[in-house]
Length: 558
Image (cartoon, one colour):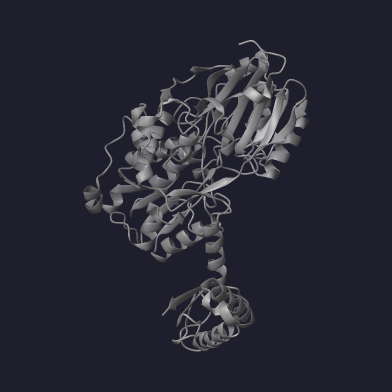
């Protein structure tokens, strides 16, 4: 495709810049009024205590609706890269492109969402290429903490962009191939206009470490635990880690039981592409319940303390198959994701209360390594690719800013540090942020997508910190109260006896005074009465409890 004088090549992150997770990156080509787009990844992030009732959060794709999207290319199968497809594909309706392992998991995700038959999925071979109009996309093999991670060499008439995806350099990845340094170096020789690159570990010196070293440490640790049951908590998506645990267990006379739906789904995907093909059959639920304690190892989801995952149910004693107690062992072969410290601590405390001995990377540093590049690996990547422009992504603001400084130190001529919604012109001319488009987050709430600032979540947050008061009474048509006023408190300090009971009695009196203070026809208007009662009771609650609860008034007209 030939370029015209009005063509531009732009990069637009709608997720994954100024945050770790929820990746949605867009590349546009053409004149401003008639751009064509490709999308790299459509991922989720997860709720936290500030989003009560919300487990899954997705990027807002409003800007993309109605745009010419040539394709959605998935770099790898982590949830923060593919997890939003089931929620957002119908708003983009573009074909999907992925390598076999990722494609297998995408099909499962779209089947669960009930839209698989609507979506065209193109399975791309490793190192394959994709023709998407002005974009020629080459898959480049990388190494990461999941099978088949890919970088994207995106060639356009205005230059080539190297989108690294998530990566590290590991000469012993256990499963899969090493990072394709030859292909990246060839790109650098050809000329890389811009590199959009992972920033997760930019503050960490050295390198992330090798999965081969982890396999050796896990083998030593599992082999040293001669007696009792062993559970290993790790990310189900880390097939290399699962492979290492399984082989160590089999070497030392233990059979594997998979605890958690994700474990079963990922192993199915791995076997689909030829991985884990030579391991023993996993134990069934029935077999695992009666298998000798010294001869079993449970591979469990829930290493981050997730409430409904396998390890949480084991710790609470509610798992139907896995039971751990005194004399048993639990290995945490995963890093603590920032923000999960409290939930992981509570999980480990509950296991310890059961007499389970714990092993973490703090006391056994070799049982986990990161899947993201540290500074030595970043230095090597820039030496291979030699981009003219560095565009850090996949990081909080501090990560992205530090990455840009580091790239400048390494001699990269230009850097740009976009936030979600910033449109970056990569060519022609100097790299610059030229626009800001609508962006944000959508919450999966009750099976539907709702705005981040939606009324339901606002009220839920308010209720979670301030409580709820429900006031009910009957009135006649002329506005006279003809029943007792019942006031009930939810989430307020105290109990039904003193002092809460006395406070509610006082609120009932104040509600009656508020109604009686209304003049004339005002008492005949339910909305006016409700507002008057809410205003008075919120003020009174502030005086009593230093809280302003939600006040719901129920009026029965007789």
